[in-house]
Length: 160
Image (tube, rainbow, N blue to C red; front, side, top):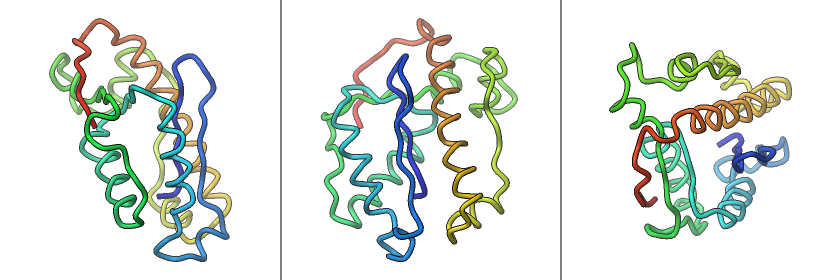
């Protein structure tokens, strides 16, 4: 994991990213930022993601389990995944966040060249900064989509 961001509704996004010092720890490189993410998650009752139930949450849970970091147990955090709102309420050519954002008129979604991801993993500072900013933009786009989708789905207590 290279970085994370959480954007409280209507507030500035908060996040953390891996450092060159972290990368020297090899398989435990993301330990510090996993701890900072778990500590930040304790401030929330609800988390909104896009395809997070199939990627982000299992990925983070696995990284935490591997490093013996306590991940929120089922029932501790409500999770709303806008991917399924998009999939079941609209008919887009692909159910990607950028397609939904375009439909809703939310700007800011960009793409990352896979080469930048690889360079960031090996500590290229410019690539690491780009990935960090990309992740921040993603949560801002997600917030914009969330605001525009309000009312298109019943907010059930789906738990992490």
